[in-house]
Image (cartoon, rainbow, N blue to C red; front, top):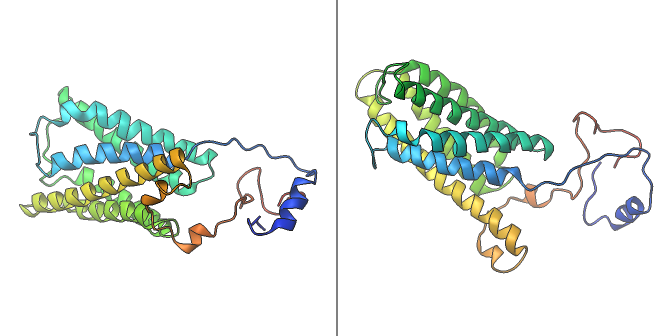
Length: 248
């Protein structure tokens, strides 16, 4: 049972009734904004380098701190705050990809200090390909779930999932790996641009509210997202379970 904005009698009863159960929720800003910002920055840097728009084989040794902290740690923190925001999608996506970028940065650092040998991302690389198998499955699941929210977020995760799927070509041998990784990089670049736009909408909505200016940045929210209730009881979360007396 949930509280809809159109159910005025129930809202009135709620406001004039002392519940038998007290639940303390801490209002926080949308952690997805931070997660998407970190994701967009790190993915753009890494994917544009992988597409060979700039740099050389030594570039990861310079860019890895930015990727580790902004793309990795910032996303990971956003994912942890997703628990507090009761947003499973945010938690899964940003902890997953934040961990990936921190791990990739650690790998680049180990190469930089000579602990492990240099290995091209355009050749057979099954150890990294195994990462992408896991990333691909979870990202496709998240992309399908994001359809219920808005088409921009779906575009972010769809392009990310497609690129990750193609990146599994690192299991292969030969010149096709280079082609495959460049194609994957272009999907990730598009994903990062969409993520930047989604963060921009967060900023505009937070700063300008429901003004005409804020509405100039459409998200193409689907009916299921626009129809979500204002207050939703816990659907099995610890401490906020459905069916507790006195809870809506």
